[in-house]
Amino acid sequence: MRRAWTLPVLFVLCGSALAAALFSSGTPGAAGALLLVFVLIAGVHSPLVFPRSVSALEAQRRSAVDGRPVVFWRPGCQYCLRLRFRLGRSARQVHWVDIWRDPAGAAAVRAANDGDETVPTVVVAGRAYTNPSPAWVRRQLSYRADGS
Image (cartoon, rainbow, N blue to C red; front, side, top):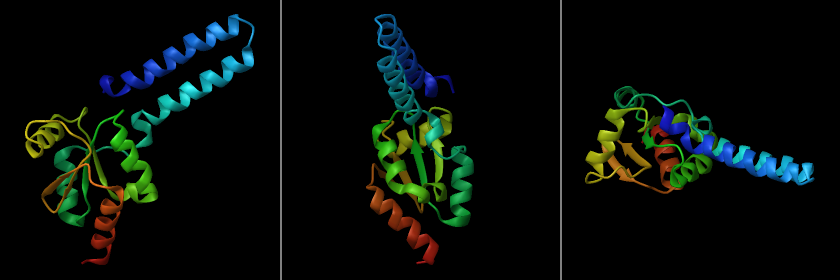
């Protein structure tokens, strides 16, 4: 859990230090704007942007029932962020597993990627796909919804 928040906390601390320097030099408006930018960047790289993660075991169980994809991700991953934002509201239909919070999820990703923890790894119908395009994942969701 702590590792997931390291990058966002570093962004806030760096932004705070830079904003304090700007504030002390007499530019409070620029200091406030800079701090806001760093806080927004920290928010985007935090686990808060993603739907609630479940364990790998729970995600696999749910996927077996409803046929929805399982996405293995980690905070700070730019490709995971791209997938999350490009899925839009559809992201809530996917089962998300944070590999930094779930050792079984990390093991599943390593097994699918020759020992590497490459994310996002998407599992559909028991088959793993590494860093698929968001459009492809969206199509998988529509196939599952149609029952095809």
